[in-house]
Length: 243
Image (cartoon, rainbow, N blue to C red; front, side):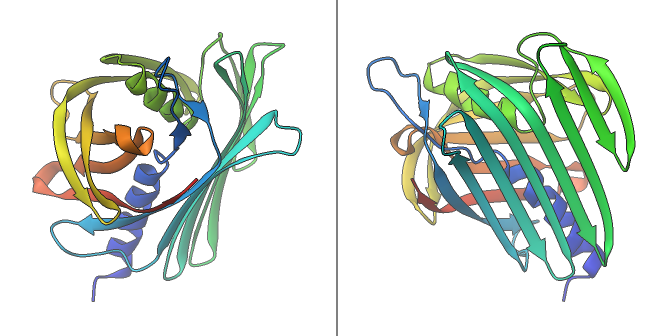
């Protein structure tokens, strides 16, 4: 039986991975997907066979006025759970994050973060355990999960290089990705051709993140793999998708 500490580590990684799962509806003419509500589940393979005992769900919903969107993810195992959510506006083919929330609970101990975007003042406020800070932002800045939707859209548009500014930890962080090839991926949902995208990290960083997008599934992420140091790897495979 894996220790609770190891199960928690896998839960954290699982949440980081599955927040990528943001399906869309592709437009065959422009190859520019539009947003569509969804519900998706993934299975995880940890270090060559050990699986996470718990559940993972990802949902994208639109409010009644069809202006704001909410992306919500939750992973749970034993006595731990992690939730992330991003509320945003999609307008004129632009994504404007409004609020990002994070909550983790382990054996009754909780940690929360709340990031609010004020686009009139071009400012973001981050409340972490009741200790707020503010920073200036410019157009195009994303939260910790909203930028992933832009990555999916740009892959669908045929781009091969991707750069995003993300408000994270009191400063702007720059995330870079590039198309790394194509291959057939077999997952519980089926076998599909996929476009492989790699995150570009510092030269000495041993971590490696690979994401596979399936065009036949409206460029949904069908597989995600992260390789850690000491030859440890974590893989997600798409299990179910409802749109």
